[in-house]
Length: 512
Image 1 (cartoon, rainbow, N blue to C red):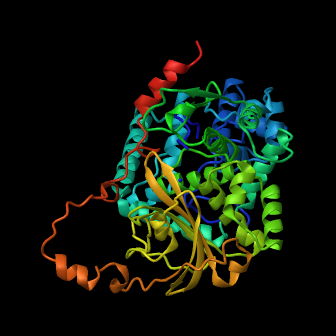
Image 2 (cartoon, rainbow, N blue to C red; image 1 turned 60 degrees about the vertical axis):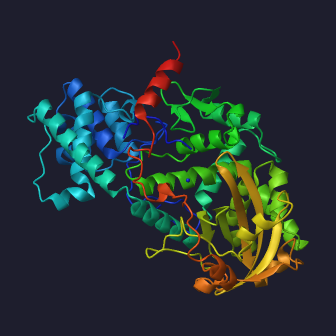
Image 3 (cartoon, rainbow, N blue to C red; image 1 turned 180 degrees about the vertical axis):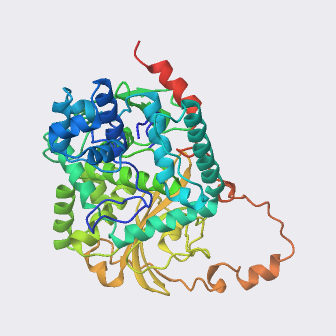
């Protein structure tokens, strides 16, 4: 698939292996958005057929020259068999062209592009459920009919995706994502390897990865980073694939660290992402690029060395990880969850919650039980008032991390939480470990302790009896509705992104 729109701005599938990538439940064609990988068999086949017909050669003629049957060559041209590189090289020589011509990711013509799109639609999982016969795609099929069929299939797919894009759909996608992350201990070695290779390409030797280093990584991949003050409001970054530019917000715009944003955009290129087919795949890609950015900013080798030294001293602290690599507390906390179980043998949990206790992000592999709805989703649920993640808001000094023990229905956990102030509000970032693992953590000597009986409503969901007696029937609050939990998901391939805004932006900034 050749990408015609922007790379997704900037958060699942099953891990390939315990150290592999997250892969989507709906595998996309193998073509990378950067155009550097081998295209999928359909595109290869159409380019091969185009070159053969342009040269006036027949199937049998070319097949005989390279020692294969005409039927086998026909399967390759129809995208039903993936050819070995040696076969493609022989075909290129027989047709008097370069191998790169056959491996170009763009279809050879508009008609070929339409044929590829129709073939993909008919091979999709949903087509068989329609109970329709397959249309034979060949030269006798009029281009107008081809356009109509492609348009119908894509309109149906868009309509289906929009109907499915409900809050429940999003929560189920998040649930599946969290389960796959837990199964891999939130560690993905393939992404770690990609990050290490990119760092090696710029001769990184250690310490914080600064803006200059990120610029060099982008240049190594053939891209330049451009800061601008007029990014479309629905985007965090925009990548111009044609002119090899990545547009980032101006530092004074109050956006996230531009290093992270730039690395997330580069992550789509390095990880070979295609345009997501649904919201679940969009989430997968978002998790992967966030992981990639963190593994570049906090390289595995240096981070693990620091953590092991701290473990030997029984003095692990998220703050030290943050300060050593000049990243945010939340980035350091996330990175700790990537490395703690695989390299230190410490199961962990992580939360990001609002001042009202509502969960925005969470992960666990240590047995802690998050509040959840009937589907098992935790986003939008409110954590217990006794949990450290909420108690941190009550501390007099919000600049310091707060440590406490909490006895819960699934065991006792020690947690450290810090306040994160953002343009969107004030949040708590919390990392926790089981009681048996607290011996490795700084702050374990804290005397702060609480007991959570949730989901027992008498724990913190019902007001104390004296307050209830005094005010029940005499209070009428105006509720602040969490409308984002009720609204349909924003439409579009990249949820909420306005394509017209993006294309106008690229027109304004394209080199003359």
